[in-house]
Length: 431
Image 1 (cartoon, rainbow, N blue to C red):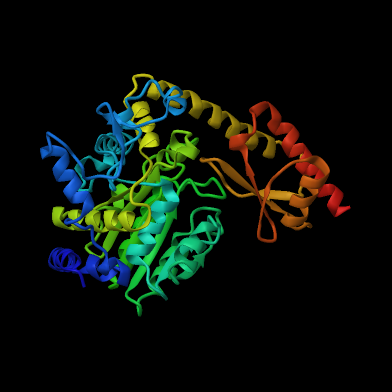
Image 2: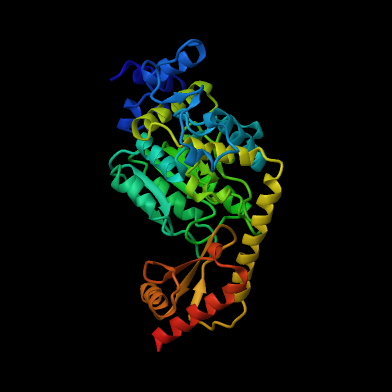
């Protein structure tokens, strides 16, 4: 094993044996090289005042070399902020700005100990880093039965982990914390579990209330007290889009200092929060009372980044940073929030109006981009295909009964026509 990896592992073993035990085989072996091209280039950047012949970019006139046909569309930006490589951990100013934003959005973090967010190539990349660092073949990854299908690819196919599902809702159509607890405690023989909490949920658009959040935290605490090392990932992709009386903070804060056997990891990003899907800018943040643990995990994380994508795209990091520091940012974001909330409320008004009879139920939703219908008397796939072929309407079929509708991409004035047409399609198939 590389001495740098060994040093990081010794730090973790000394500071938090439980976190060390959570690491996968790859997680134990990975490190960020301190001696090599990046470190030598970084040293030269501060000391090479005459010529810097270290890093693989081209320069001209003291600026990164660039084409006019590209720069003429980006004249608001200094070439050094878009053409150079970003550091593997991300643009330092962006990391600092996102940390500030996290604390503003989650006041409970004020008294917590957590690391500096590391920039990822959006949220899927952040989740894959978690999988690489903590998931080995056979490890349990616990998710609700209504989930984003990419979890299976990221944790199951890529890393060989066992996907363990529990029903998202209980009989009262609230979050099924008892199911989560049962799935966790079933891992006692393994002594380790990875839990992914995704709120607002994709595909249902559900976020638990405060009491439900406390129940989730209690279930994880119970597992830790039973001797299970729990890696808890809050997948906060749709964070901030809370339209009703639900949790309005990430559970990351409550989980950050819950128990020595619990490692809280926040995966979030500008992707959906700031409506910049194609920019691919996300973040991964660790919580620990130990600064040494945070430093070691950051080193291992940047090691994974260096070994896979080297570093994230610099231009999009600069664009997001500019938005976060703009005096117009909050007002513009509030404007988009109001539009999204209006669409969600309109959907709920339509579904509660009684105009659609009993051909479907809908799962509780109060946030995010989506909602799900639970169809009766017809399969979701049949409805999806019929809508597409006969009416030119696209929806997502999930399992036998569930049809996911993304109200996020439908203008509010068109929602009535959309659901009326879905209703028509269902009745045509039933007939």
